Image 1 (cartoon, rainbow, N blue to C red):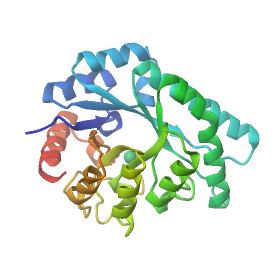
Image 2: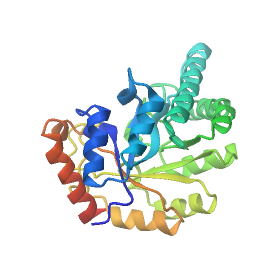
Image 3: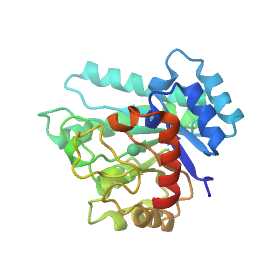
Amino acid sequence: MDLSRLCIHTITTKPWPIETALERFSARGVAGMTVWRDALEGRDIAAAGRRIRDAGMAVVSLCRGGFFPAETAAARQEAIDDNRRAVEEAAALGAPLVVLVCGAVPGQPLDVSRGQIRDGIEAVLPDAQAAGVRLGIEPLHPMYADSRSAINTMAQANDMAEAIGSPFAGVVVDVYHLWWDPDLEAEIGRCGRMGKLFAFHVCDWRTPTEDLLLDRGLMGEGCIDIPQIRGWVEEAGFDGYNEVEIFSERYWAIEQEQFLGRIIEAYTTYS
Ligand code: ZN
């Protein structure tokens, strides 16, 4: 069972504090961990990073920054300040990447939001570059275009990363958000040629999906051809981690050690 590229997000096993998650992941041979900022609350961030590495795992990324669009200049500045803090936290943790859920404002035209996202990323980039931390634009499924992200396709994320033109700005591919896109294979190839494919997230799309946010499935439990998309990502030159990112009330309600066993089984069978 090859788990050498398996990374699990702390939010996937949300009921576990980070200390428990790192022990249990490590005991099962999980190779990497992506840390959500809520898991670090009240902790010494640098010490948390050391504990993950001491347990034999890589710190893959910090989730999440973004949410740049806002109706007032003051609120947009607050978002930029918060993203600068995220970069500082990533540097303290030893995470090479901050994942960006870029944001949107209900009722504000999406192209206005995209302009604010670009301005926000460009404002944070000097800090990111100085800290050696990359910023990954994660396109979100269009069902979140109202309030969570105005960047909804791989093409839009590629266009933005290309326009920004920094080696510290790239793209995060999440199968949950992108599996439906007829241009996905071509745009993943384009992203790879630009050297901007920074991370790869997996889970599955359940039918019916009962909650827009909190009903993600385990790999193999839905309609996404994960091996096909993973193949495209690898053909594009990506050799990083396969990150299991599942928000699920149904799985958070079960015993987490049992859930972890199911994640590993699903990963080795269906990813
Ligand atoms: Zn994701």
